[in-house]
Length: 218
Image 1 (cartoon, rainbow, N blue to C red):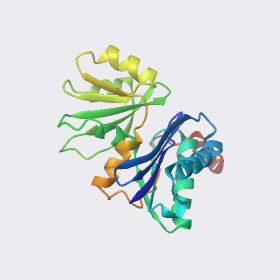
Image 2: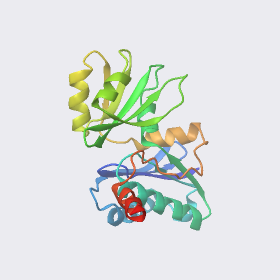
Image 3: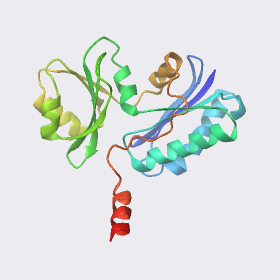
Image 4: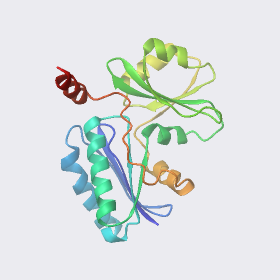
């Protein structure tokens, strides 16, 4: 199976082209707020350098967030459109699920992401609890973290890093430079349940939606 996978949840776009487990192309490029100008040239590069035709792709995958509201919308829209036009499979997955998979030992794991406004996106992973994606302030996070938790986050999330190293000195901490597209591919190979899931994980309601609802109620 040939898969084209992208992550547009953060400040960079990650893209990978895979034939089963073999990586044909992998690239990470700073996007900031130019996702819509960067994503299609990256897809073109992946196809050309991977030596395939876009019609050869069997599955289009994308991260669903949480993260950049604009980035997630662009990523989902582009990859879902390609899958529909070409009549191919689609796979969507929340970002914390990929980060959690980087620690494969049987630990109590929590994934943290910077949500801005001195808040955190939080998700716990173990064999008992149902995964819930939460938005927590600093006091709420302190109550949630247990002493045996392995804490996973991105190195670029400087606010998360500073807070974790200060407040949770006894916990095991694991950081990553970016969302690993290879791990994304591994998850698909092991579990196809995410196919056709393309509902973004925003957690916090975007300000634009809040303002729209407020204006309708006035």
